[in-house]
Length: 214
Image (cartoon, rainbow, N blue to C red; front, side, top):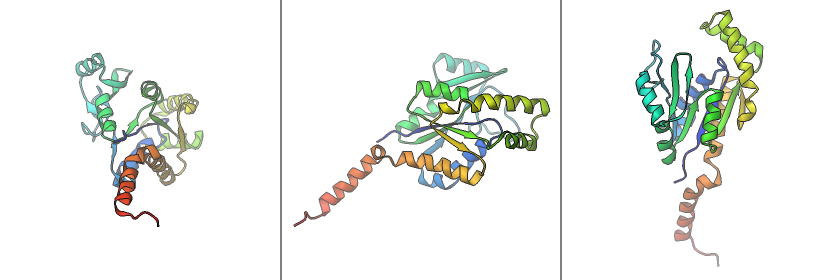
């Protein structure tokens, strides 16, 4: 069995990455099977509507620190007073079973994963313009003007690092961006090396049933 592929998705805050991932997991590609979303661990408290094991694995700091000591994370980071990390157990057992895994992590986390697992494919989701991203951040109503300004400044830093990634999707149309994301994953699934086992089955079927040309 060929191992699954690891796909790393990063984007500036407000670009629509979460919506694209939700569409990917719930949409047509899910019908092909063999796709999993890696749920991160965090020490922050759940927000209203968040579910443990679906949005995050919510753990206390002692548990998180013990996982760090055990090298249980593919990557982790401290953001203000909270910790976030990608557990190896969320990724490698699935890859070994031939399941493709999608990670939703920031640019710094993506760089750490690519350094430790260079076989992964990085996909950067980019807004079509500064004005568009600013408008999205204002419309969602989660931040005041000062926080929005900080997010836009960080976005410039992140966008400048697009060349660390293998693919770039400009999210100027959600449906089209979702289709491009699915196409990237499907293309990797149909490479010759990954199709080898199935092709050999078909060849054996033809060899067993077919007649040699006269």
